[in-house]
Amino acid sequence: MEKNYTGRDHIASVFGGERTDRIPVRTMQSFIPILGRAGVTAREVRTQPQKFVKAMATLYEIVPQDGITVLVGDPAMFAELFGLSYEEFKTRGLELFGDKLGFKKARLPDPKRFERLLYYQEICHLADAALPEATVEAMTVSPWSTAMVMRGTENLIFDTKDDPQFVHELLRFTTEFAKMVAAGLAETEIGMLTIGDPSAGTSVISPKMFRQWVKPYLGETIDYLKGLTQKPICLHICGYTDPIMEDLVSLGVDAISMDSPASLKKMVELSQGRVVIEGNFPTELYAEGTKEQIEKKVKECIDTAAKPSGYRYILCSGCQVPDNAPLENVKHFLDVGRQYGHYH
Amino acid sequence: MDELREIAENLVEGEVDKVRELTQAAIDKGIDVGKILNEGLTAGMTRVGELFKKEEIFLPEVLFAARAMKAGMELLEPLLLSSGVVTKGKIVLGTVKGDVHDIGKNLVAIMLNGAGFEVIDLGVDTPAERFVQAAKEHGARLIGMSALLGTTMQNMRTAIKALEEAGLKGQVKTMVGGAIVTQSFADKIGADGYAPDAPSAVDKAKELLGLS
Image (cartoon, rainbow over all chains, first blue to last red; front, side, top):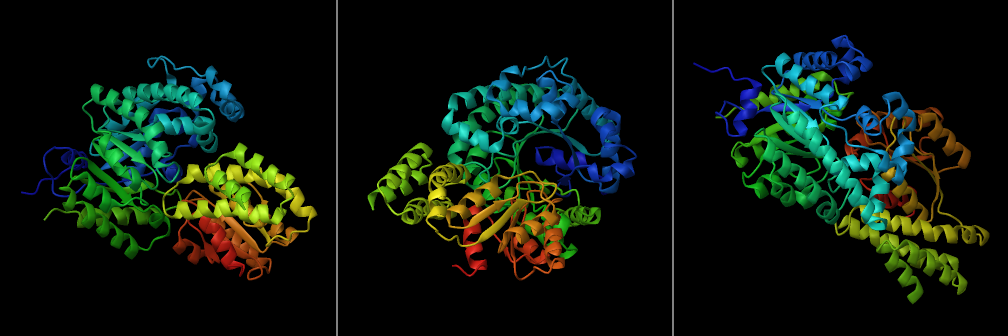
């Protein structure tokens, strides 16, 4: 008799759980485009965990998939670090971020009283109950990309040459912050914790810069989390990452989520099954692609990564699905993935 | 000429203070400003483009070099204007409406400037009509648009349509770029050209304007 596996079963299987009958399939997708259908407003999802989860559940109803993401991190979090209200931060945020001395005003809160962390923890808890068949993934902040948001991409890159001492101080702060937030999320019922490091790839920085500035602090964060939790830890970096693939694998994460500019084939060959690979369907195809193009690319991803990686592969969007993507395209991606991704 | 080669080498290394110092020294020595530009600054930036395409350097090194280029240009520009050096043409640049990402666009601006174009930088969050208005106002030959998001890249289509409605399609070329933009998207929206990165944008601009 055929067993009905859930999304949680499919994702758990690639991390060493019981083998199911197909590869896991999911997207990284915002629920912003379906707020109206969910009957919630942007302000409500920003302030009420139940409304946030209602939006997640509505998205899941429209495009059911094996995993669903809670994207952690927003201006309200930074506001709290500077002891400001959200509204105050909206007016003063850029000024604070532009001023090197302004960072001295930021303080790491007590995690038990960090309101924004408590908010996201509540969301993870509610999502686990509301979506029992899907793996709830929390995508959390990273040291480097947080520093980039705070300082500005160009400014931080110039700082690495002009004021390296400052960069170390800033990264020390953002590392402690990243560790605190991730540890708080790991305490919840989530099925996977992903560190999102969008600005750490070689579309933005050089391999040399990655090794000097990103890897030490990211490595420290990952080691800390591995000492705290058994949950799978994934790393997502946007853009092109081919020159640093071995560095990424050597960080010791359980999974690497790849964007479409990176070579899936290269990662499969290089990693030799040492890590679960997730990705790397091109996001522009959700918005601009035909059904035939979507189908062709899904098959190409699966052929490249599923069996060659020893089935340590999750078919996923390379990055966030564009908000203007027709949901029929997302559904088609998921349907083809589930069908073509059946184990033979 | 050794002084100009030294300018180029220091520019490639991103040594902004050295480039500024050497450019001033070349000016003080009475070296022709067009030569300082072409054989010093532009030569350095061309080398940067070559290294970038071969993946020997990446975006940060290009940024450091561009910063050094800008420092040199600040000294040369007043002298170029007064000596009647004619630019290769005017190019309007901007990040499209709804988008505030500008690193790529800023790099393209500096590199086009160094390649001898006059750049009118409209900044970020630029509505379609503003591109068209600026092209008319400045007599620009090319509009370059940048976008980083799937949602905002659609505004490139809007701008090209606005250009058509203003009767300028064909007279003013369009070029698009940005992390999420592809050649296929550029073809779909009727853009004249697409460039995947800043060094390529200079080559493409020259090609579109018949200067390569």
